[in-house]
Amino acid sequence: MAFENLSDKLQNVFKKLRGKGILTEADVDVALKEVRMALLEADVNFKIVKQFNAAVKERAIGEDVMKSLTPGQMVIKIVNEELVSLMGGEAVELELLPGMAKTIIMMVGLQGSGKTTTAAKLAGKLKEQGKRPLLVACDIYRPAAIEQLRINAEKVGVPLFEMGTGNKASAIAQSAIQFATDNNKNVIIIDTAGRLQIDEDMMQELEDIKKTVDVTKTLLVVDAMTGQDAVNIAQGFADRIGIDGVILTKLDGDARGGAALSVRAVTGVPIIYAGMGEKLTDLEQFYPDRMASRILGMGDVLSLIEKAEAAVDEEEARDMAERLKKNEINFEDYLVSMKQMKQMGGLAEVLKMMPGFSSSSLMIDDTKLARMEAIISSMTIKERRNPKILNVSRKNRIAKGAGVDIMEVNRMVKQFEQSKKAIKQMGGIGGLMGGKRGKGMRGMLGKRGMKGLF
Image 1: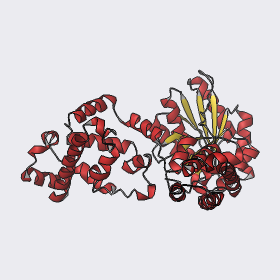
Image 2: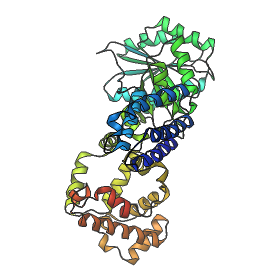
Image 3: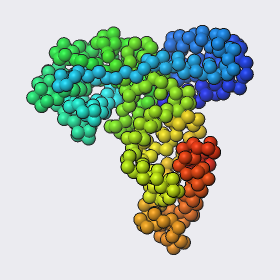
Image 4: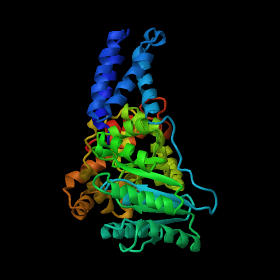
């Protein structure tokens, strides 16, 4: 994910601060110098870095911090709060007109920013919220863009309005409004053309659309990997046509992340959504406080809970909890858990959201997880539910079915037994979730359940 290098560097800075019983102004200066370098390397706008450091220093050298019993922790708290403030303070909802009043959203951005895919993601998200969206293809220069939007519209189950490439974008938008009226659609999402850079023709076309139809919201789609250039792009669009919000794409990639820390502060326009993957469901509301927590290595438990709620069937979870209490888990539970983990983005993605797990230390081998799934899938239902019957003959058959060596089958069975013992030692589900022994889920996973995956 974006920010990994920044996160690791900031955590190293804070590790030094935590080790000091007394904090001097010189200590703060040294720490902030390292913070400044880390932010600049993450491609944060240099003016923003200067303002950020000044704000942190002003608060960090206050008497309350210097005389605190834990000054290092107080400085970290200040940095966290200033990061949240830098990214907008609070999450901003995309405001839509009530009832069947038409909300017209114009998506703008440079070519290659992920605008067309994001338009479909947004349409799918709004449909899930009970809205009646319509996608409109106004990129009249790239037939491939229209086809891409058509395919994605079908995938998210949202209708597409298009008139090919032979009409002006403003005329297509106008016709789309009438189509929306005739078909009871209340959110019209217009995908416009992009260029490799901001130019007069593109801006004029966007202005023509805004003159022709009553655009409610103009959303700028920015590729997080463009770094500091994202700020210039955002400012250019804001100055010429006006923008109401930003959607950052590719925040799940190896972007340095500076755009997220710069765009809001420079333009005053909120980041509303973040694209966190290639799937059409991978569009998340942008929460400044959660993003700051991720950057500082504090995890993002709220997002993790939301992902779990979306991926886990409630009744299934209750059944598994009951079996955990009785220590009756079996390989079917393992298989269900693996599938749920995939829906949540994979084990590495889940662990990144848990406090205390450094991104750089997560060397998870997904092929081993895939082989474990293949092994369990090669078992009969009886074998999954009662692993005690797994003799050498059965293991050989399972190994052949999964295309692995019998040693891998033995290793997985051993890990399974160790997990059951760990749950029993921790007192069932109470200990599993962080009970009397203080180990909790992380203790079990770290020493037993994940052994062999890293």
